[in-house]
Amino acid sequence: MSISSLSDLASHHCRGLRFILTDVDDTLTWLGQLPVETLQALAQLQANDIRVIPVTGGCAGWSDMIARTLPVDGVITEGGACFIGKTTDQRLTYQFWRDEQVMRDEQSRLLAKVTDVLQAFPILRLARDQAYRLTDVAIDYAQDIKPAALEEKEACLDALIALGINAKASSIHINVCSEGYDKFAMAQRILSQVYGLSDTEQKVQVLYVGDAPNDESMFARFPLSVGVANISEHLSKMHYLPGYQTTQPGGLGFAELADFILSARR
Image (cartoon, rainbow, N blue to C red; front, top):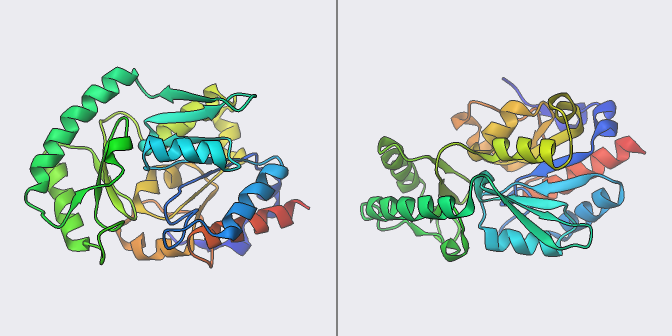
């Protein structure tokens, strides 16, 4: 399967868009920062009635801040465990995949298992934002660990999966969560239940943007999908690829995409 350049994205697809769902780390951000161009792109998309919903493996505490301060419609956080939405008067609401307390109990059991596995990988450690996570466990291999511990990441992933633990790698973390949900499952639920989109409408009114293997469930199911340029380093390990790719990396690529879409809609 090959990826088309962004210039091949048909203008009628751009005109039909109502939603952009996007990963955050290395998709909205670049080199650990949110580029000015990205913030401007988010504001311009909102002004043109395109709702942006970040879909991230990041912690709920961080996602709460994103939902409160950036021009987005809400945030799907912790890999699909929770949707942080907004009321008309800008209050936040939390909608969990399952009962919140059940998910907190599952998190405690996962944390104990992950802690045991990490004893074999002393260079890896729990992400510094673990205390602000409500449902999952994150292992840092490339956020605060420099240079990235790529070999140890792969070995740790193999060890977790061998134990039957649900684990996937993002561009900076190994994310560990209970079974039964992922980014796509929660995205589909929210698009259907909160925004009233049918499956058919989701295929033509929603575009997804990402950069890493943990975005594959979204690439597999949204026909309109885009990878920012830095996804290139992961393509050889991925089964499901985005339909299109930007020329710029991270948040600069997101801004490139926004400009392309808005130009096509004028």
